[in-house]
Length: 122
Length: 112
Image (cartoon, rainbow over all chains, first blue to last red; front, side, top):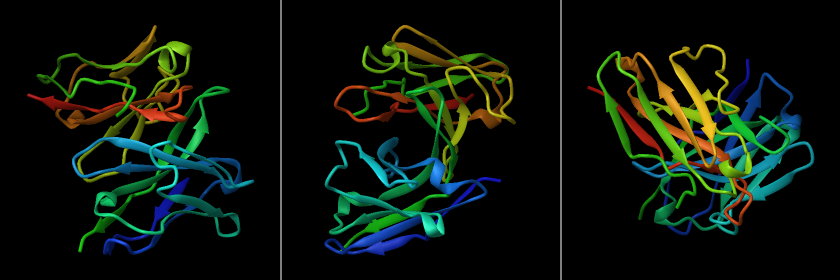
């Protein structure tokens, strides 16, 4: 069974750094893209970034380029999302999800982590 | 903002048929890219509901169906049930400067 297990909720102050994780199991971690999706309180889903753990190929949404850093450690089947200086507007639920091909150019997210709630408040 | 537009809400009585539209453009749905759908209940992670425009993952009831035409796609729920009350999101790929995968704005389905 494919599982993505995310790290627990975080409460941080503005300006602090943070790294959240997503551990995959039940499949070959290096052969599927992993994506991160933001959901702000009461709002919709936003695609942030993706990483291919096999070779660390990375793509960012223009909206999030420079705001976050995505990485992966394939030796422990874990992907990460990190911030160097949090803002109050980063308060949101963050989901990781496995991304698999529907066609040669289109992908979908078939398995999702449980989400990590990040709260940034002074 | 998202490049895929959905109605904020749709509603129907139990047993009725409701449809959710996902309107895109020539750089995403209209370019032939597949559309996928997700269902999300309050406080839980999204769940894949439909992939490749009209394919249901194992375990998804056949009262859910998907279609695509031109620059739009639709998700239909026939025989609406109380347990279908949730948020629904479409997703596709966009070849413009907006990035790679894109989600729709989301639709709240209410069972009257």
